[in-house]
Length: 148
Image (cartoon, rainbow, N blue to C red; front, top):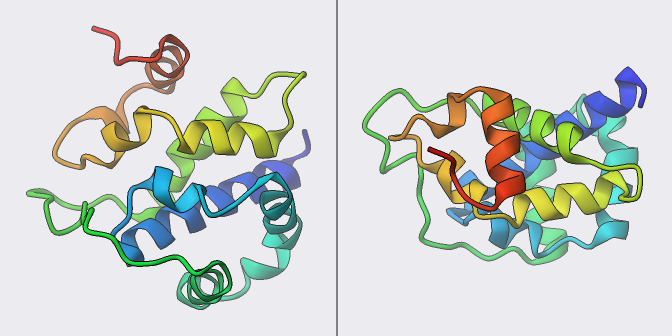
């Protein structure tokens, strides 16, 4: 995978995080609006969209896909400094890149990662999960549970 493709994955992961925060949705709820072809399109457009503000791109995607508001406000519930959307986007990018297999397309891996139990754990900014070692996150994801 090229550096450009890795950057595109980072951008898409970050915009999903941004949309989830803007709409107060779980990350699993946001990713459910996108299928593999939608994500392929977003990965293709990432190089252009990164020149625009996250707010503009998110607003367009929220409108295009009819993403409704939820009640999962991770920012409001946080007792500490809230990590930036780009920091969390990097966490997801790393997890996607480290768990994508040769048999699976990157779009499928994005869907699987954002549909996993780990998203709620990463989104709990009062815990330490989001800044844990990437290997710990990968192993937990593959095990289907947080490891001790």
